[in-house]
Amino acid sequence: MGTDWSNTTRRRLSSGKVAFRSFALFLFAGTVAFCFLVLSPLGAFRVEITVDSSVSGNSQMFFAAEASDFSENQSQSQRVVTGSNRLAFVGNPIRETVASSLRWDPLDEPAVIEIESLEVEGYLLRERFEPSEVLRPSLDVSQVVTDGNAALIQTFSNDGQVIVDIDLEGLYQRHVLAIVATSLSVGLVASLVGVLVWSRRAISGLSTRSTGLGWQVLVIVILGTFIAIAVSWGLVAR
Image 1 (cartoon, rainbow, N blue to C red):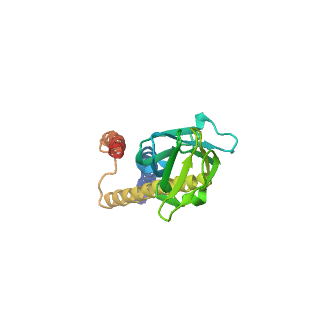
Image 2 (image 1 turned 45 degrees about the vertical axis):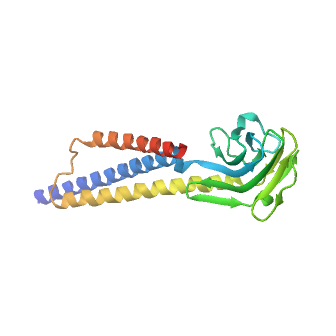
């Protein structure tokens, strides 16, 4: 009788350890996946515009909650050279560059600009917009003219302004939800694999106690994650 009670207690403790370890593994794997996706180029949320400019200069994107609140603090600039350019304006909630109102200053010089594409990209997200449908000239910029392959605009001063009618906040929410869903999925898969491994070890009579390599594995995973992030950003920057 005492032996049966002891065995039952031991099995319950073993099951409790497996449950705790699987939950810890779920949190750890999910957190590592989330950090990797947020910090790597995969998690960069951006407005990308491909243009062909007649002159060089600077292009600037402004982000604001209201159209009357545009400021330099909530903007990003990109250098434009004569010819083809791919401009990427990265949205970041910490810098308040994810907002419902967008204003694009195509160039700080009078120029003729051909807009080949306008896209919003994020994690598992890529939305393409027709420039003629979402660009609304506001100051010193001509109407958008489409020739079938690209859209053309002309800036008449060094302060040409265009309002961009895109639901950036809604797209950013989809971007974040995709990252969270992937992180949860990674954590769930890791915990299920852990449960399978630990259960088989328990059934085979092997000890489920730590082998003393836990902290080494933790360090390796963290260092590997940051190395992967650095390498991926390096490849993007090339």
